[in-house]
Figure 1 (cartoon, rainbow, N blue to C red):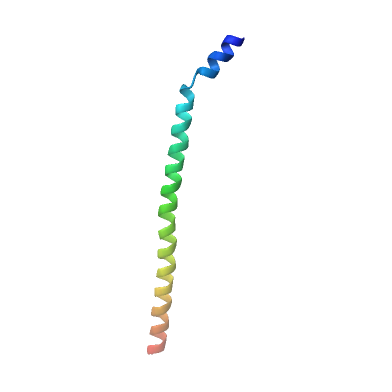
Figure 2: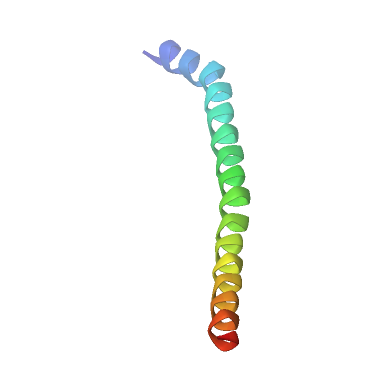
Length: 61
């Protein structure tokens, strides 16, 4: 039993896989944040431009 436990504690092959999974998840999360941020900003800007054009059109009639 003790030798099996020692062997299990020394085996670190699964740790490398876990490291890669965590690293990949972090990269995907950062990529999503980098994409979503500008999209919401662009949506707000487009709404502001649309509102300004509508107001200008209503005032020029």
